[in-house]
Image (cartoon, rainbow, N blue to C red; front, side, top):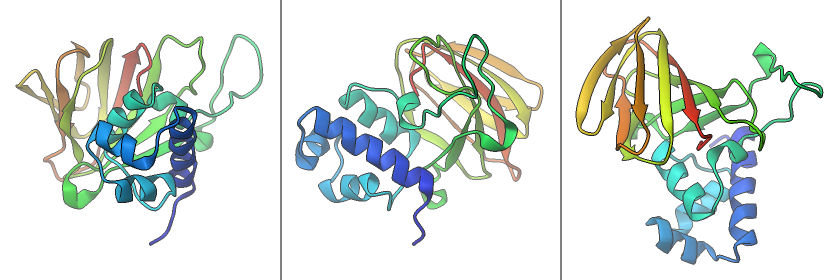
Length: 193
């Protein structure tokens, strides 16, 4: 199995956060309901987690997902530029589990940023079926394709050109039942991923 550079970088950051808290793999596993073996593979970049699993981990480790794949901005000053071919990407989940999603970070994480902006790339059959909730609000705009957004038990079919907005405290997830990949501009405030 090939280890991606992003998986290794994310795994190292998870391990660093765990060690800073003085937790063993077993203790962290008990807090989030995951096995020590899976956490070890994740920390060593030999496995990928779903968005819901990563969300559980960062909450237990008192951090957020932005910190997992933060990249330094291009230059200094009031304007942050992220070049098209240089955006950090985070792949989560697995196709066979139906939770495969790739996040393309449009703006790197910085402590002074109030927004988190990604493109969620949802392959056919992929999604985030495990519901999550957290403080904040979310906005999205479907760039291409179609997908189903589920918020507080209500399903909404969304297609290219559609927009949505909801309170992040409501349990939410999504799935792509279509034949084509969906690309969704997704904005969170405050940054939670």
